[in-house]
Image (cartoon, rainbow, N blue to C red; front, side, top):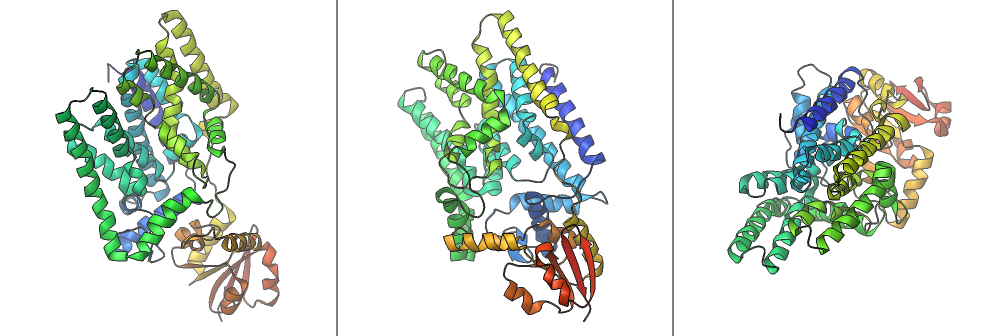
Length: 476
């Protein structure tokens, strides 16, 4: 810690500030990610179903089980503290470890404590990274696994652990570091940098580790059969690449635009840094090993731009890549006064973007919305909850269904899946008025919004208003 005091001080500051915000400014779980993972994790623990996340009693085959299970355990071990605090503190702790890995990973090339710390700071203060550091999500674990695998690659069991985290957190995408290391050793073997004995040893390690984790997929195929193949492999992976499923549309350069929005000036500096890195490699001033580290996360960003489904948080693992390239170009400047001046300039840009243009530490990601208050009250007063999806969403879903852009689980969540968590009992979401009409008026509670206010005209029972929503309580 004495040797690396700049990053130590920054990480302590980062943790204390975010922890203070989580503890003393608690907010409800937001839609979508948080409410999905805390609810599925809670059900996994309560129902003792550990093969996959569980949503309202049914296996959610889209995602591997590890991360929701971890959050479910945190919920169980909250010891009276609000889950909105304990689960988010868990995310923060993992995020700090991710930043430690970012520092160690890129310091292999930079070999400069200050520049490596600046890379960490740029990463940490990027809006998307900050959001993920203080919310329940999967993305922090994929980057944790990707970086940890390479950092601890020479230790078979340690690297297997990090590959396990990545794969059991994000499924097939988790194999990214194994693929990258395979490419690295294949290239260095062909160039003579890696000897034959060492090459075969490392390739066997990668293949054996991958086979261990692929055995989980084989087991799930045996247990769930075609259902697993369709939902987990086809819909959750291949269809996201080949089509804009659900509502995840976007322009062709969606992820480039997202990178510019997230990184600001550092995006353009990263392009300059990337060009300088390539020039130095071709001039034999940079080894392939350093080039590998310098561009380790770039293939992921390139892959994103080839996919049809556009989701902004997929950019998360690429954040350290742009941060490093933006800062790393300073490494090539041999004149210390100029390096110092430019470093101060980057600190100034970071301070401007993070605290003046937008105070990233003051951003709140959720608040007590009307549907949150409705679910809390309904938990106390209602034996069941039936929610009619609003008219606009019903129309949009009908259009998507006609285009074949829905998947098996699309209609599981409603407009606000957090209602399921805060209601604490089963919630039925209706996307068709005929189905809703068939149960409307039975004992229980019903939710409609302002565009379906006609239901109030012939309802007999108590009616409460929550913003644009109406909670109708029938005791018949």
